[in-house]
Image 1 (tube, one colour):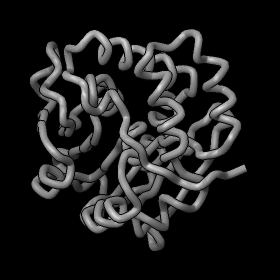
Image 2 (cartoon, rainbow, N blue to C red; image 1 turned 180 degrees about the horizontal axis):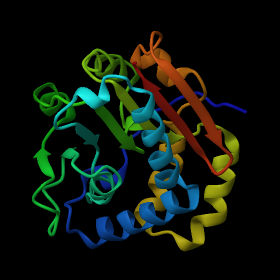
Image 3 (tube, one colour; image 1 turned 180 degrees about the vertical axis):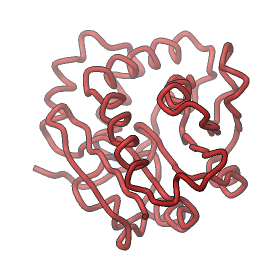
Image 4 (tube, helix red, strand yellow; image 1 turned 135 degrees about the vertical axis):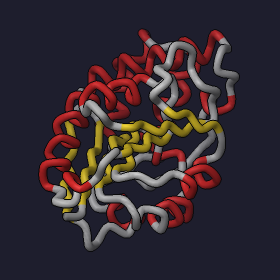
Length: 220
């Protein structure tokens, strides 16, 4: 059963990157994303979209932009999945240590940084639920130059809340607060394509029972 969408403050968003609570929360998020299979799905989805995007072979140096890059792990993976790809990572947090020099890191507000980033694909894991409907509409207006968008977001129904309760004893204090807040700010089928204005794109939208709503959209 779907519940009304409510965007609330999440603690991790306001902690310094090296705060022990933030370090623990990011570790929790990596475990949650692994359990949800989000990275595995994204790899397959992006490869499928690249194959279906006719313009792709004409791009000399394709660029993928990751929004909400966090600790940079997905940005690293993008470079491995697509050799020769240039990755641009956006986040409020400073550049993580040890990130390959080939990955360009832009620290700041998404809406300030994204207009200066030109690329073929925009990707993100558990980031869009932080934005109000109005800001998602605003983001959608910035997607016109892209050929591919790919996102994994919380599935906003009661069952993921139940799964979160089962995980609660194994989570840190920040994640115990932020996980239910993330679910309440998540999405049900059809919401993201509508808010992002993807009506003329090819769409694949699916829900995984473990709590992930997945969106892949591309232009030929």
